[in-house]
Amino acid sequence: MSARAPAVSYDARNTLGHRLRILAGIFVSIVFLFPIYWMVLTSFKQQVDIFTNPPTFFFEPTLATYKEYMRRADIVRRIVNTIIVAAGSGLLSIVVGTMAGYALARIRLRGAGTIGLIILLSRGVPPIALAVPMFLVARKLGLTDKHITLILAYSTFLIPYVMWLMRGFFLALPKELEESAMIDGCSRYGAFFKIILPISLPGLLSTLIFSMILAWEELLFALVLTNRYASTIPVAIAGIAGDTVNGANWGALTAVGTITVVPVVIFALLVQKWLIKGLADGATKG
Amino acid sequence: MMKSVPPAKTDVSRSRWRDQVGDLFERWSFLMPSILVLTVMLAYPIFYTIEISFASFDIATFGAGEWIGWANYEEVIGDYRFWDSLQVTLIYLVIALPLQVTLGFGIAFLINAEWWGRSALRALFIIPMVVAPVVAGGMWRMILDPLWGIMNYWMGLAGISSLDWFGDPKLAMAAIIIIDTWRWTPFIVLIATAALLALPKDVFEAAKIDGANWWSTLWSVAVPLLVPIIAATFVIRWLGAVKMFDIVLAATYGGPGKATNIINLFIYEEAFRSLRFAESAAMAVIVLVLTMVLTGIFLRGSRKLEELF
Image 1: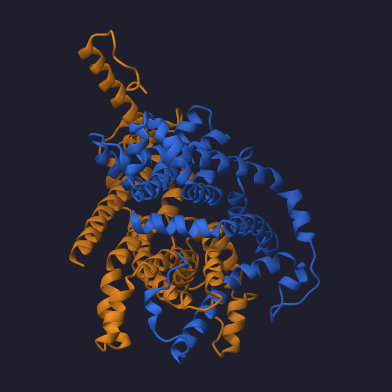
Image 2: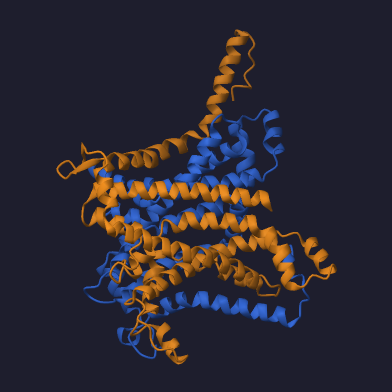
């Protein structure tokens, strides 16, 4: 992707316009990154440094908020829960969704087009329309506050997502690949596992990571389907942010916010090349 | 699998039949797991919501009680709060979507200027995209705080008197749209970047040789080429925007008053705070139908645009 020069910037390299464009690009990036910088910075402040006017940029950093809040709000258990749910739903969805994406892209099936369209449309289903019945059924079956419930609930939006991205990915592969494999005596599954999956690995990986991130961030289902044992970090953040009784607890908010964001950002930056390519391909070729 | 077994001594037609069934089974087996999970977790809950929406809610069994026809719908449609909330949602969508798509493509143009820092900028730009929306809401609430927030401090430096971001209904909606735009524009930038890079270079060369200026090149060459992608991006963003919940919950909780009480938050409150499950189900069904119809229209519209250009 970076090998090709963008067609739009055909204008001469060193014109004033080009320089302005670079400067504007840098400026916009700073504007977009500042809020995160400010959150991370605030999380290392003491209470007296948070509530100041003018705001403080230089101060003695402290881990006090982290230590205090970790203990009080059960953050460690929430982190473990969030990891279990994100990994579980991500893996389930990537397996199931990739197979379906392959079927829609490559296998002739009567009615599959309709099914594909329905599943695509399901991306527009407002989660609240699912949250109400899921809560009632889970309560009846004694399945609230369990990891598996959340994992299955998340698969309702992750499977269609994976399916759609991977379908686009498979459509871009040359058809001869599995045809020749199947002529050589491979079964359809053999061709899928031995030929198709290995070349799709970058797309597969970026889709998996992005699915896990989506699950990691999810709030509504976690709010509705868990209360104590399987509760996740976003629920804790919503609790802190919505706590109007004790006023704004910005220390806690920024500390837990940083804990939530930093691992995901590191992960995303590590695989950013694949991530960008996978997402962009999925979006433009879908 | 079955094809590789030679049908040596068995009845030929029977084995062919078995081959066909086996083949059909194998084909569908790729799709079956998804269909299974989505039927249980997606289709069934939707049907259950529809069932509850036509019934009275029985608190004792915590399920659908007796069938009461359209009564829940009548009640919901007569409820001004429902309409207010729909209106709030509409305002948010009408402002946020075009804003984000335009900004996204504009910024993609800026950060793809050729220089040595380009790939770094592109990588940094995905960071806001992976910030949990609930964190984004909380974090911006701090930034926009009327007393201690850094935004009002900066605006004070620029000579603008401090704004009560979360006290004024219009400003609160503006705040929600700002936060949402901050969170989602990078996603559009990413798609737009791919689209810009895929533009055919020779067309631009030709335009340049023909003496087209910058503006007419943009307007009559680049934009028509980009229209299908812009339409597709709009649809993708729409599918996300109708789920708007986390940011509002963390930043304003629908306030001040009901000024930012987006429909998803309203239904959530009605169901899980007021325990009015039957009415909530009716509202959810209405919203579901509205969303589906609009999504269908947008999908068709974007196909049409693709054919036109």
